[in-house]
Length: 240
Length: 239
Image (cartoon, rainbow over all chains, first blue to last red; front, side):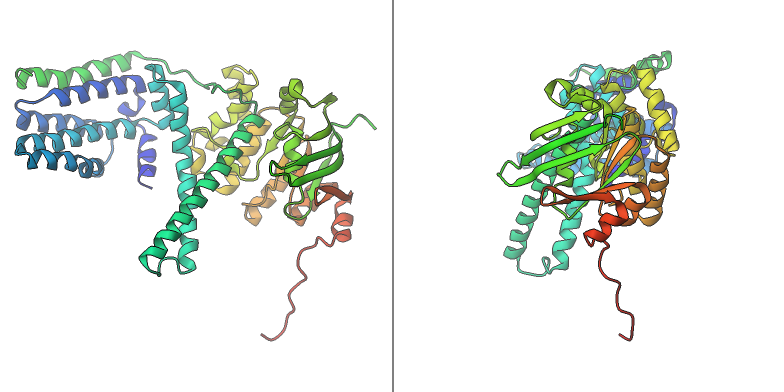
């Protein structure tokens, strides 16, 4: 699966990987806002923002080409809005939309690729995100693999019985059936997980094994990481 | 003989749709013994063990380590009984193996330092210390099973229940599990269809049939009495 690669990247070691998740999230938020409010002189600022993100990937010792290539996953979604802007006679806005979406995706990817999911979720929790929401995200990520494997097995089983070779209507019917069974299996899985949690004394609250703590190096990282894009925007972007 | 660790009398349970699952089950487990629960699919073995720490509630009486099982003694029962589920994927839900193994001790009120120490010790005991910081979904089936057992051992239970633990294991994995279980001092209940595994780890077998205990005794005796040896050997000859 695509995110299995990100999971592997996030568990590598580099100075950027070692930074506290909270400062990385804060730096990302500053970057995203800065990109979003940049209008004038984007032809110059856009590549500079991209260079910052690329520098982050290189600092994290991650494959730059692979990382920037993965960020293009956002383009089909932004293309809808960019296309609408272009059809409305505003090609400049269309380009801005696509470019900003890509930059934002690349920056988010940098955060995800340098922060293991548990640390990332704890980082969000430390910044005040609701714990329940983060717990749901954690379970979703964990069991995505399991449900995906079950879906693949069911697809293979259907194909082995000729499910792929019939007409389109029959295939649609088979797919709908598979989906229903997948829901049922997911429900059974959820019941099992809940029982397993209760059996180990779960009382509705996730206790954490470690509390994250900020170090001086984290503060030293946050200062330039947040200041650089802002400084570029203020120096070269003119009035908003 | 000393008071049994688990004593079940006349346990009855119906599924929500009214189908009878257990119809008057009596059972005892004593300290230090390992009991295999055998029987066909749907005979009530898993449903029975889910009652022992209150995950399902039927009629009848259950005593765990001297206390009657009820709403007030649930946490006591869950502290005493460690239940390893058939599919370890259902049990391993935390982001790393270490955090998953520490999940139980933290819920039971252990401090972070103690929970970490207990988790590391349990992982060491099952030979999984090197995987402490790996995500559970990167483990093989045998490693997941070991991690799931570590998650239970970290809670220091007096009784271990394993529900079809060899289902996802290859023969070397099953053999490793046998070695591991033989080293653990806890009393154990093993739900299994694997007769070789049952004979290797259990002194006694209880045979379930249609929600009742149809017989109990030594494993070979029960296996022979109920014809539970598996299919007859294939006839050899020219194809």
